[in-house]
Structures are given as structure tokens and as C-alpha cells.
Length: 106
Image (cartoon, rainbow, N blue to C red):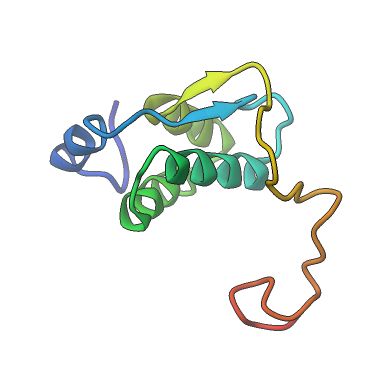
């Protein structure tokens, strides 16, 4: 696959890392939720922030279809959402509170 942000040597390195298990890739058609779930799964798999950020930057470099392809390239899909204690962004999280957006108040 040809990436926009990830170089071939970076791709080879990323593919040596433990494979994150991401629930329901693309089933809810919510790009932000998918990026969040990928980041959480990669963190749980032991990825460092710089590697997670690189894949997220690649995910966001084109349209939604590219995001799905990149996520499936670096993660495996789980049909079940076995996450416990993870914030449900749509229902439970108040983005207006202080610090919710990287320290900036909305």
C-alpha cells in the first residue's frame, strides 16, 4: 500500500509491533471514534505515542475510506467491543469541561 505520511522503513517497523485489536472497524462510520479506538488499542498493545501519532496522521491524510484502509493495515478487527472503563465519546464525555481538548477551554 502507498502511504502519504508513513515511509516504507517506518511501515516495516510498525508492522513488527504487537497488533492492536480494534472493535468494529468502520461499522459506525464515525472517524473520530475509530481514531480514538485505534489509539486506545495501540496503547494497550504497548505502542509508544510517537508510533500511534504517526498512524493517526496517516489515517487523517485523506478521506474516510483511507482511514479504514490504514486502520485495517495496522490493526485487527474485533467484532465485540470488550473495552471496560473507556469513555464513550458520544454519550458520557463533556468536551466543554476544562482540559478536555488538550488543556484549552471551549
